[in-house]
Image (cartoon, rainbow, N blue to C red; front, side, top):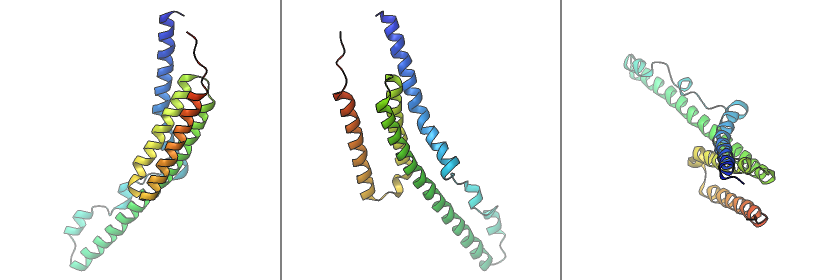
Length: 166
């Protein structure tokens, strides 16, 4: 096989691999926002011109009411972020596992590698957004399951690869 042809094939497979790896996490992120739970808009969770209204409040009772209402909106915003993060975490975990399994059955090395790398990045992205809300036990169990799945996939693919001829 000509070395230039071999380099071209490797380059083409690498581009496909990294392209898939970069696009899959974005795809899952925006799919979550469209079909599951949208990311909250911070402006819809605050009193318009809050600082100005607090300064112009006639008495302490009005200031207290404004402050209480602003804190209620802020708490609703934090709750909405947590709900979005949770939905995104579980959806990205599900999609990541699906991408890994799909990668097992693809024969093209660029697509296979891209799916598996994209799946890992997708799962990482889900953890990144939801890590703060996870309990220690759930962190441990989900990471343990992830390691087992990746080890199993790696072992299956490496152990059953036919030896290349020189």
